[in-house]
Image (cartoon, rainbow, N blue to C red; front, top):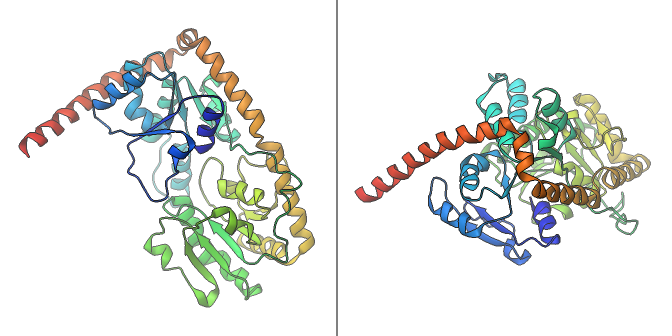
Length: 388
């Protein structure tokens, strides 16, 4: 999202960031970027007055839940605004994979699946972060390709000067970093502690495993074990710095979707990684990985130990990571594509929408159902205030 905001600022958009989320100590300092921030509430007619007065040319929804809450209001009060959905990742795909892993029930036509794809149809364009998810939507769900734009992480090329990172000898220990409120990260840390780390620790008793992440629940905190060098470190004040000083990143994700920022960040920081096919999905295409990709705990351990102990293997892996970043995630290329796409849509918005009959149909029915539900909640809230 920050990369998208920077894109808009660089192309002379006046940006307003409106959110129903409560402030946190760790939130991005958007005002220093020149972005106006506004607090909004769900099921509140005050949003109607706000968005009508603002009269934006372009509205971006951060994930489909925001489109569900506010999309119909934007369509009603700013019908000429281009509506874009930033999916982040396909939530239904992540949940489907999680249910397949945990054995929880999941059906093809789940509520989450229907809601998310309906949101994609209702928007003029959806940003899809992974080529795998693009292919899934087009081939399995028959979503028209014109409604989708592949828009991955965007990075400047790593220059030769920037490749001067801490050396193999200057680095120590293994690292895992990620939001520990996120189910795939939670599972990966537990899997590390219970299955993979005992195998690594047996071969490298002096090495440490550092787990960084905000919002660590108690069951993760209980995994802190100095006797085996498995250390829960909490939130990193500077993620890039801790990754840059680790020797190897271990990311045994067993389910998830989208692109994994912890792995692309490791590449930028010159830190090789061992991960699973789920972790690597959508990142390297047919390019060699900057370490190893495997689901087998024994193979995972062997690769981790080899990267940790072999300077030659480690240095070759570091260079592969730089090559992936510079080849697959060119900021300049995708900025140009996105800008061209926005301009073309704005110039031909009515004709473009006329071709999306399914989207217009879903918008029509969604507006009706959501309108009456929202009005019910507004009335209920008003009555409760009167009673108080």
